[in-house]
Length: 570
Image (cartoon, rainbow, N blue to C red):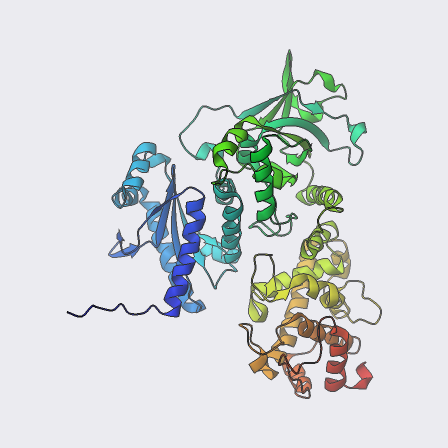
């Protein structure tokens, strides 16, 4: 009797499996148990629904849906169907949990242990090719947590670096507090630390509204309450400034801990919540801002005990080397509880804006790291954007963000070190785009500001509506410009690879600098106008024949202007 041969999986099926495995690895490495739900259906009205996968830890259940479909229309139908299913589950959580518990002994045990009312269910939706979710999408599919691809890649990196301890950042992403996870507890709302040093304001210098305090905390507790505002993470990109954690650095520091069994003597620099208090014998606890310069009387620091309350500015690798992992865990688990870290905490008053706070934090970060390992160029640009939001490089980054969300350049710029996009944002911003969007144009370079009809005075006064209007004007003008390039050189507009250099920094920067030259003579034009101009170009973008390399942006720009507009524009 002949054996039955399985039908070979299609490339899309293989891609779907790989994407599914990546999601599974993230949650399992954080300590969740995988519950197989594929091919099992839950009744939803007159039909039945299938959940791609589920994960359980304590009283938290994650229901995960994923797709590798590239068609936006079918993806919209798919996410709408999952939204309806999630709404039904939310509406009848008790009925869903009864079904869910029957699918797995692990699920049944967790539901029984914590009780239906204590269980928290999250529905997560992952799309490999539709990751730029808008606020309108989030409102429309409000029963789902729409997870951008860059967020999945970020968590995938974090579990590779710090294993199970990455779960605390997931809790932050999901908006969970310590009181939400596990059993209901009568734990104190504060962590108490003995003998803190509250520094007099005249010892510190700088902004006298800011207070500074030093104290020691166990590595185990620090892991639970700490967070880092990483540029490559999932948060709002306008207020984050730190670099991605490094796997090899974590590994080396963990080896040091294992071998030497000693703590680190240099301080962790962190931001504490403004609700921090100090206490002393025979004195009532009070705000740190009411402490006088007679600091010797203060013997206790009262710090809110919750996930993600202490923001690390410097020292993330020293903290996360204590992570709950696999290698050396037998000894490190004991050191995590025993050894303490010296923390210098900065406390900002509640009256201070988030923008002001981030400016101070990012300056401290740059001051500390200025002579250490070189900070990534993209990160430095982003920090500069926080310090000076109207600088030409800052506005250029906003334009890049706009272009990267939708349209011709969707997902084409590298927003993160984890991104596989072709174009390095820093190179585009620093060497070409900054001139096109500058509020104060550079001599010999044309800028869109000359032709924008908005309120320039409001823009210069950092009015956010005016800035948004100007950024949109610049981005739409560029989209029209590059649409003509795509139409003329359609066979070379290939971002998947192949024998073409059109999707490269040297080409994109060349066209940007050419436009900057043209704007000295005329206003931004329509796609149809540029089509007529670019029909005159005879350029071979193949890797062997394209003659401009590396940083020869200006030479390429001169050729474009000369051939398409003539010598009068040079």
